[in-house]
Image 1 (cartoon, one colour):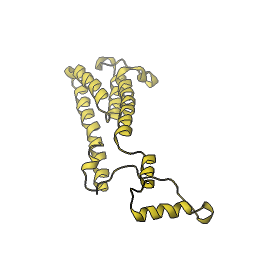
Image 2 (cartoon, one colour):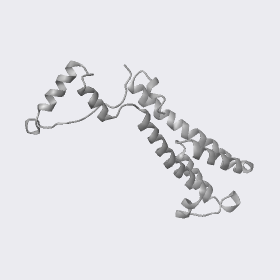
Image 3 (tube, rainbow, N blue to C red):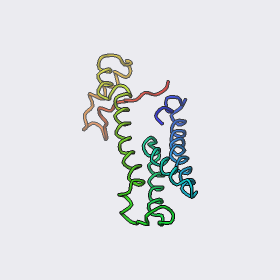
Image 4 (cartoon, one colour):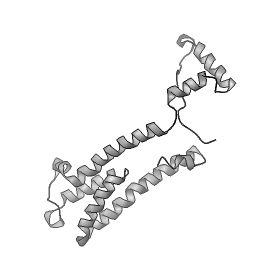
Length: 166
């Protein structure tokens, strides 16, 4: 839900809306597939949808894993093999959502790092180059002159490295 944050007017709105959308994006497909698993003639459709959601939906990992566990733990007459305990994690309905989410996290992390704008070090060089406000430059100079012995606590080299709406 990284796309929703820039469209919100306040940070508070984004922090309330994004998690709700994430729960819906993971929960609605999970509920639909759980219902299909309960219907006798739609188990194969449910497993196909389970595989598709596991691959394309990064929010499906928790409901997908639970649904995979439910299917693998099902009695043979319900379509499962009756397996229990750690044998579940070798089965594709359980392993697929977990493995795909690890892959999706790596891909999305790479995209966020490469798309989000200047890195913290670049922000510092912009400030040093004189692109900041005069009062900010004065604050940077005064903090740079402080020593740890003169302050009860001190933060150094912190950077604001994300965009906020103005």
